[in-house]
Image 1: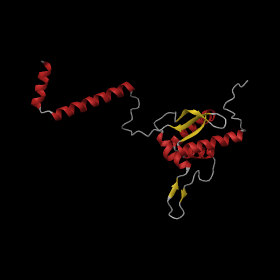
Image 2: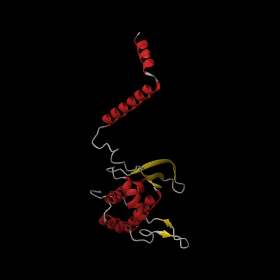
Image 3: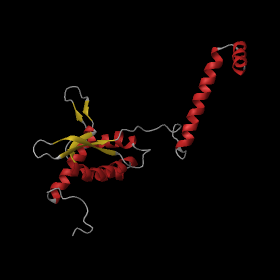
Image 4: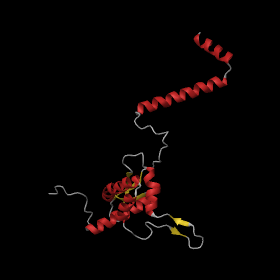
Length: 188
């Protein structure tokens, strides 16, 4: 029986699973999407979402936790420079997580990734394949945010705005005399 046994073994030792999780999370953050098997994607998804939730806080403590979780490999924290020109070739992964990925999901309370199942199977063992990708969402401006407003109210506001803009367009197109004639003809 497997009472209260969490996670998937994935036919790996604990150290191998940890390395797999780290490497796949770093690849996902670096590329935005990865192609993998269903079991691996389901195992990595909560791990990545916890890291993104930490990155949304953008504190020194969160930065240290993510650095400890992903490991201190070369190129994770630092930037890669061109030796001749001194230009930044690639921003470090930690900087990318905190400067790009974390702020992208500030207004979102979870569900930062999606799993898209592919119809084709892997050639070697016919394993089911999926694409694990980060959901694209940009940070909404504070004045555009509709927090606490229902979907029905937002739709009604949009309808009112469209109607007002249509009325404004009609009133600028037709002179007042022609508008009255058109209204009287409609009433007949």
